[in-house]
Length: 387
Ligand SMILES: [Zn+2]
Ligand SMILES: [Zn+2]
Image (cartoon, rainbow, N blue to C red; front, side, top):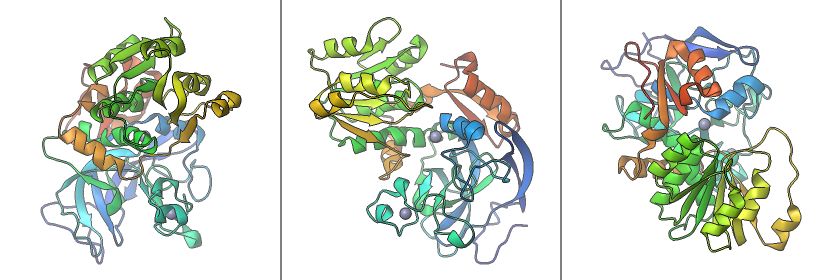
């Protein structure tokens, strides 16, 4: 039985020595295998993973590699486990850990910075300068589970205590996996200045981050909140999450429609979540002079951008990475206070052994899939109907 030296375990929560884990082979290839249950070090805990959501970035990594970086390179054929949007139960405590207790339910954020670089020292741990340096003699202690260290498509994982967020019993496993997504939206709005009450916000792209971006912006008091996209079923969910207006960009010119809704001047902020090739040029025309644009998605190819328009109008552009500045804690606070219902973006659930099917649903948007969750526990975790 699992009993590593210096690690605290509990008879109430027996931990096996090995676990089921998916590993990435060639691009697009996942294999179910057996791995040893990992051992937490100082300031780390062992989390029993109960549920994990699939993110568009997982698909990017599984088929293309970056932004994952394993042992300084591409993540393929390195016995590496992807997956980063998980939640679970604390199963063992590393030496000296008293911040959490065994049996406590938690959700996670991704990045544990090195704690010693210039950016970490300034609180920007998702921009850690030692990103991916956590192996061999270049080990700086950085972790980004599912990006630079083993992730959540398995039964147990190690988390630095800085990456844990305690959750209430009333929050379901599925909902808890969405905290990190809401946290990314929260971080975007934080980087834009955070004081969005009464300010006008456009969110472009009704994927999970965009939809929860609408919810977070509304919960922070933004007005109006406008969502643009091309799928009516997703725009409808945006309305349910608090959008004041939705614009179907296939039916009308989104830039003109946004400007019209805001007295011809454009809005104060745009949170760009579509990654469409023309998204930046549209966003800089949706904001008013001196407005701010947060880029939370990216296209595959380099795209031309109208720099003159940005300069002449004093427009600010922000690229964000991950869910920094403890944004997941603030997102979880909104969710546990039921300021919005994040479960509206959760559409399907599969058991861990059906991960390839779950990924197929997420990738091909089968049956209008938005957020697909994989559950590691319980009997046949079944598919739930889209609301
Ligand atoms: Zn993600
Ligand atoms: Zn760092």
